Image 1: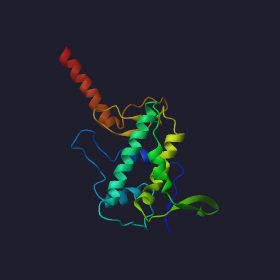
Image 2: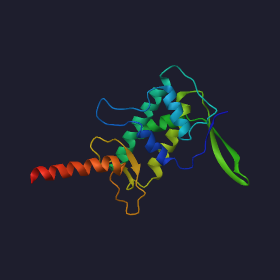
Image 3: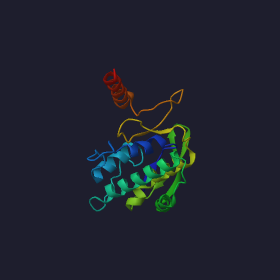
Image 4: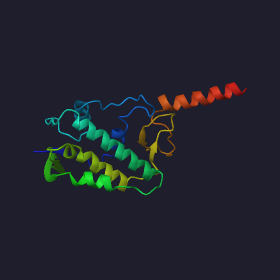
Length: 190
């Protein structure tokens, strides 16, 4: 039996998938260094059941995950820039997502329809992420999908602030760096 995808909206999880790259300049930190890293991320993000650990040729899952991550990054950037989204490659990946629907009781008296994805191929294991990425591209308010304005910070986030003016992935890190850099520039000018 495949892993349940219980997320109804995993937009944040897809953006966090993009954020597994820690910096744009090389050498960069990549949280997905091995197949085990991918399995751990999928489980932590709710895309893979804790009881499942798919096994493929060494390096096959991490290569597939990195490829999907870069494809989603490219498509999200296209959508954010108002460009035509070249989604044919994502549709190819979505075509590999083999799943069945099942109705389950999640709490006493509360039912939920879930998808159970096959786990026979790398594409099937990653299909829930591709599906939620497609949903993000189709359904999200891209005025609120933002890339951090921090220097060389590749992180993306969904701005849920009241004023919708958030500029950084994390004020304590990127925001403070930007403010300190502006302060140093002003001090040099004086």
